[in-house]
Structures are given as structure tokens and as C-alpha cells.
Amino acid sequence: MTRYPGQKRFLIAVDCIIFGFDGEHLKLLLIKRGFEPEKGKWSLMGGFVQSEESLDEAANRILRQLTGLEGVYMEQIETLGDPERDPVERTLSVAYFALIDIHQYETHISGEYQAEWFPINKYPKLIFDHSNMVESARKRLRYKASLHPILFELLPEKFTMPQLQYLYEDVYNATFDKRNFSRKILSTNLLMKQKDKDKSASKKGAFYYKLNKRRYNDNFDSFLKLIPNPDHLI
Amino acid sequence: MTRYPGQKRFLIAVDCIIFGFDGEHLKLLLIKRGFEPEKGKWSLMGGFVQSEESLDEAANRILRQLTGLEGVYMEQIETLGDPERDPVERTLSVAYFALIDIHQYETHISGEYQAEWFPINKYPKLIFDHSNMVESARKRLRYKASLHPILFELLPEKFTMPQLQYLYEDVYNATFDKRNFSRKILSTNLLMKQKDKDKSASKKGAFYYKLNKRRYNDNFDSFLKLIPNPDHLI
DNA sequence: TCAAAAGTGTTTATTCTACACCCATGG
DNA sequence: CCATGGGTGTAGAATAAACACTTTTGA
Image (tube, rainbow over all chains, first blue to last red; front, side, top):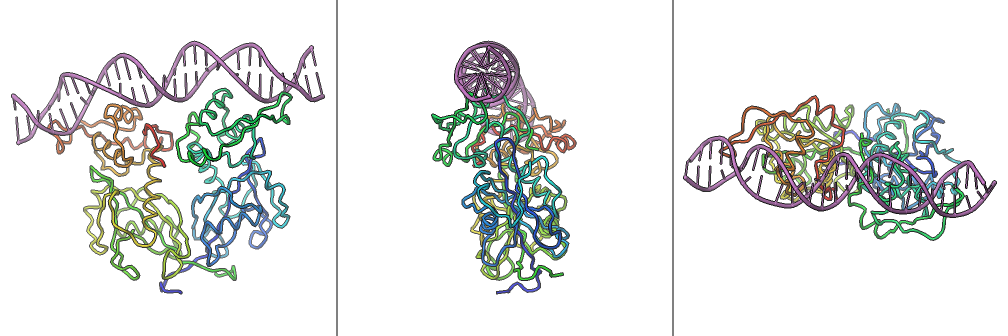
């Protein structure tokens, strides 16, 4: 089993940056760490990689433990390996981000982790280098979303154009002209207009849209010029 | 030292995808693996992470071992962790790509690794999952180079506009109109035209350019629309 | 009836694309 | 003197940006 002699072996953690969208703001799901050191402090949801699982499997397992969700959009971001990053024992951590429909999580009760959603612009101090991971994840999300339609992963099955615009505006911390925005979105042909309206946010009501899943999958990799001036990609 | 009981620990390797440009084609630097298993087969340059070094330090050490170069542009790409990826013992590998000026390497002699440059479109079968790493690296290079001026890292201090265009054409496997290309490149204001010419490729000679390093560093993160239609980003 | 949010078109500015000829030189 | 690769400009097309009024309806 152990056949490369003389080499050091390390603990490997996977930590998940879990994004959600509540209709107004991009949110981050954090837990209170359940063991020492730093017990009780705010932390990303994470866990150690087990001997027979791949990294992707570990990330999915960890997400499922907290949220009960499967089949979620996840992407590996980076691996942090500073020798001093965990004071107890040298541990490398592979960071993943996950995009979930916040409403599906809300139905799942898991008091075990004392999880809470925080606005992405105002989250508490985190343990170790977890804040760095969050910032890398935000940056990666902007990068990716400027080219690919991944932000739909954060929305429920039916959503309105104003909701979608709020989402983009919060991710890029910018405001867009609603006429230009909806024209661009609709020009992708990824959306199917529904007959019913969401009347929760206004008297007039806003039409629902659904994602055309086939076109979404087929065109996922093709370039989308949704973001006018991606200086935000810094 | 070991204080998270009951968890498995793993070997961690760093493997480097080393890109170079010979004036015509994008190249990949490979070595012949020096130890079992798969001894003598083509492989990326790699090594195990030591107990007191960070991942970036390991990557730089490994690059230096092979090429003698320091201060090279490197970027972490991804970590592969399939339980079966190394048949000897479970090993995670953190892949980095490096962009080097091929001429600086040519002066460094290191027969130790039997290293060779291969065209990126025609490299031999590699051990383990190293081909996957190379393909991820190519994709990442295209991604990054479509937004940031990193390809200059592959060129010598002085280079010509035709050389630069060949480089972009080979990275994106496309051809560009030379008038439009040079207009776009010059509009970034990153280049300083020199008074002398490279006469090695034509009778008329092509003017040399140098990178304006200050502007390069200042504007590194700002958006560059160098690639007309980034369908290549797939 | 009016406040609040949704929906919609046009004009202008900017950027991108396509395209062809002259230049300089070494052999 | 000519073959080879280097260098340059413009017009038309496509895309992006700016901008304001009408509609709906619950309270």
C-alpha cells in the first residue's frame, strides 16, 4: 500500500463555499465549527477526504451532509496548502464552490451545524484561511458567470426577469439598464416565458420564465456577452 | 504534530505543465520518468510536496530543478485526486502551469531528466492522468489569455509583431487578420516599438517590440478583447 | 386614484470585420 | 530585379449604450 518511501503524507480537507440567492442578494452559507480548535467560530462547511473517495465525491458528500441536496452545480476552485494554515496539523484544503437554490435548502433542517446564510458583502470573520477561499470563489463566480450561464443554478425553476437582474447586479456589484439587460438575456434563447406571473413583488406582477434545459446544456460552453464591461473580473 | 485522529493521510505531488514558444509553435516540456512504476515513459515534471513547503514553493522548486529558472509565471490549475490515479499508492496531484521563455531554457543543460519539447498538438502518451492535466492546462491558458496579456510571458524580451501573432494563432488554433491583430495589440498600449529589426525571418525585417513592464503589471487584470470570438474557450 | 414596479423601441456611438496594395531588402 | 514577408487605412456591419414613457393593479 505504502510504496513511495521517505515521503511525508498529509491530511486533505475539502471546504465548500456554498452560494445562494434569496431574490435580492447573493448569500453565503456558513456553519459554526463543531470541534477544536476554533470550535464555535464561523467556518465553511468542510471535512476530511476519506481513503477511498475522490475529491469530487468528498465535496458532494460534504454538501449533502449540510444541505441534503444532490446533483448540485459544484466546481473545484483551488487548493490551499500553506504549512501553517491549520495550527493543529498540516492540512491541505481543496476548495469547491456550490450554487444552490436557496429555497430547497430552507426546507432542510439541520440544526446540527447551526448553519446560517450571510450576505456576501457582510459575512463574519472566518477561521483559518477560509475568507481567502470565499474571495477566490467570488472572483471565480464572476469570471465564470461572465462567460457561462451558471447563475441560473441559483434560481428556482420559475423566476422573473427582475429577479434575474437583481442576481446579476449583486454578483457584479453593478446596475444594468433593464431594457438592455432583458434584451441580452432573451437573445440567448435560453429562457421560456411562462403564462403566469409572480405577484409577490408588485401589483402588476412579473412574468415567470423557465430555463430551457436542453438549450442550457447544449450551449453551456458557448460564449455569452452578458456583462457589458467586465472590469469586475478583477 | 498529529492531532486529528482517525483520518487518512495522503501523498501530495505537484506536476508542472511547462509551456514554451519557439517562434512558430506552442510547445510542452516533458521528461522521461526516472523511477518505477512507468520508469522511462513520458511524463510531466513533478515531485512530492515536502513537509515544510507550500504548494507554490513546491511548484517553483520543481520547475527550477528541471529548467534552472526562477521568477517564472506559474498558476495553479487543479488538483486531481482519483483514488486509482497512481497505482502504487494513493497520491493527489496539484497541477500548475508555467510559461517560460523557451530560449532561456535551451541554455540550461539538464540531461538528467531527458527532457524534450513537444508541439502541443502532437505530444506522446503520458503516464497516469497527465494528459488530462495537459488538456486542462491548455484550456486554462486559452481562458486566461483571452482576458489577460499572459502570452507575453512566453516571449523573449524583444519580439516582433508576426511572432506574437503566430503565438496567438497557435494557442487558439485560428488565424487572424494581421491588420486587425496589430491594431488591437497596439491599442492596449502595452508595447514599445524598438528602432531595430529582426531580419532573421524576412529580407525587409520586422520591427522589434518590448513589453512596457509597468503598464503590463498595472493593467494585468483589466479586460482585453484580444480574441474576436472566444468560442475557442470551450 | 395613485403609488410602485413591469414592460417595451429607437437613436446614436462604438467596436468589429473584411478587405488589397505598397514597401523594403537580400539574394 | 524580383520574390518574400512586413506594414498600413477605410468603409460597412454589427453590437452596445443611452434614454422615457405607458401599463397594470392592489391598496
